[in-house]
Length: 171
Length: 328
Image (tube, rainbow over all chains, first blue to last red; front, top):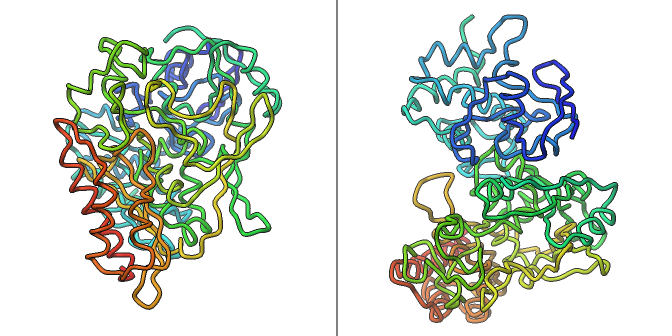
């Protein structure tokens, strides 16, 4: 089937087998290797992309079902050669070890902050009817629970995300 | 993954007609469970009919005070909706306690109701499983069954329903709107999911090519005083060992109305009517709550590894009612 994917600002027209996931289409067809294949079952978050602005597991989305979608991967976060603040914050905090989960962590964190700014509650939000909720470390950890880091870099990932959330990332 | 045909339709009727013409096949919405099961070849549909963009993605107020949730509303949008958060907090909490942010952004209301069990044997195609291959036997019955059912199971299947959202909707007396080849119908959510009996391959009462189009929540004033509590093996991103959805109304120290449903204990979300009946008109005390919980759990038939679920369920029911009665 022929579909169009708008990935990282470029329009691609490709023919795909219906079995192709967005993850495989991005990596194998478009040469966008930023999203990683970890578990391939929606459990690890390494494949996280922004799909029409929302963070999702690209390994569980069939490409044919997202014809015409707007996709942002880790490779499209940097604008005009300038790293996204979340990317700079991860570097500044040394928020990774092997780096395999990092593209998914960063894209997920960007999507997560947009959700928090929109006032979406989480499982650890004390009063879900409250107008606003502070983005505590517990909130960051809960909201990022779909991204696993088997090196265990969480101790630096949480402060990296908090700094980006507070707009304090140094240039 | 086995090859399949991918079909789109212009509207719901077209999608239903398309699938009705096929011998086997499935509707595709978010795909978070179905695509995974297809990768594992646990499910091997010949055709997928995409309905993600066909059913409503809106939550609308009905004139009589009910709230209608379109089947395509994502789990994220459902949990974040201000009306749900204030009128039915148990539902927001249940949805937020399940899966991850990424999955909730893809997963839909209709699909969440229809997700398959997480029984490890169902996923392992090298082992017998009556749900996956009827007649082959149940590996969990005498196998690793710590996660399995304590209520309503059969010799054929001891799997549990994995949804958190459905447990809250069951407590809230939701109605499920369905469109199929024979037209439209509406059923109480308690009549959607089945007990396994001799047909564990059938999770629900839906017929082939019937599509869930919406879920209606009745107006229940005291549902504003409701809560979901989930017990699992880690703090986040795990299925329930036991979960409880409850809403409570107390007048002059007496339980005037109550809704209770349990997750992680049966093949379907378990509406605790025995406990509810035991509570109405009783003093809102820990003694009443515990008595009602134990009356509900009296029917439990634990397996070798899951007897812990009986006191756990009883304790969680008692605690959640106590919290609700004290406004905590």
